[in-house]
Amino acid sequence: MKYILELNHPKHYYQFKHIRKNLINCGNEVVVLARDKDVLLNVLQEENVDYLIFGRHRKKMAAKIWGTLSILWNYAKIVKHEKPDVIITKASFYGVFMAKIFGKKSIIFPDSEVVTVTNKFVVPLCDKVVTPETFGLNYGKKHIKVPGFFENCYLAPSVFIPNKKIIQQYGLKCPYAIFRFVGWFANHDVHNGGFSLEEKLALVKAVEPFMTVYISSEKEMPEELKNYKLPTPASQIHSVLSFADLYLGDSQTMATEAALLATPSIRSNSFVGEHDMTNFIVLEKKYNLLCNRSNFEEVLALVTDFASKSRKEEWIIKQEKYNQEVGDLNKIITDIILNL
Image 1 (cartoon, helix red, strand yellow):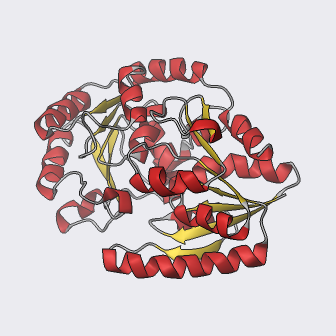
Image 2: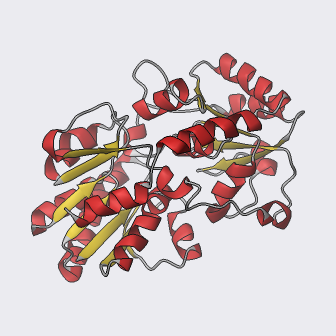
Image 3: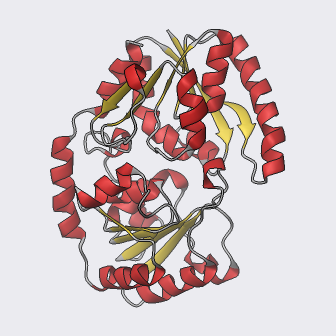
């Protein structure tokens, strides 16, 4: 069998990293399609993964519209040339649309219930939908739910061993906190947002007396924050998170990653609230691994409290309990794909 694996974000690569290897080890061919977004191409290069670029990420809405036409054209040429049997994608309209046009099968892996494009356009076109068991929607017979969260595919103890050498290699000063601020450029981020510059500065000021602050930012940082830039390469971010004593951010992905790596984690953005995504609610209410807050004053008080006294050991105990409940997610998903 021949598969196309479409990647639009660094997380997508990590999620499918071991599944891709499993498919190849079973004698299949996997062609990686990558979109030029964030640090995805850097990660693929550092991991020595061959890939084909099918499009660029564009920030402005007018550019997104024109970019969509270019992406569809490039994607069609690749599918026509590669002749895959199945297209695997996180939840991309491009992938399922091309699969439908060329008579191929498609399988998607969404973990956010609030993305309108996925619910209205992507799911109806695909052949199979795989989500975490906590997913709040039901897509009928084509829907399969699996244990845990997709981040387990690359952060489970069986597949991830943090690299202790990075602390000395990049001169990280312990104890330290990781702040992650995203760009809010994605289609599903329209009308949503995270921290303002003033709030970011206040958070740094609150934590700095207790530990070193390092910032990972999706967009270029303002002058006031450039001295806090995380010095490590993108491929080492999970090791960095694993050894951190605190995580704070308006990111969706990294909040989950930090929580599952036993780092006390605080997430705050405009998604937090009554209609928040189920995975974040479960991480907080069931496993107590993540704190979701929408009010900035609450965030400021909480991050100050977390910074002033380490809760790392407490999080490690909760992480171990969580991992005991989740099996080998990579094997489960590989079997689903092979039996599509």
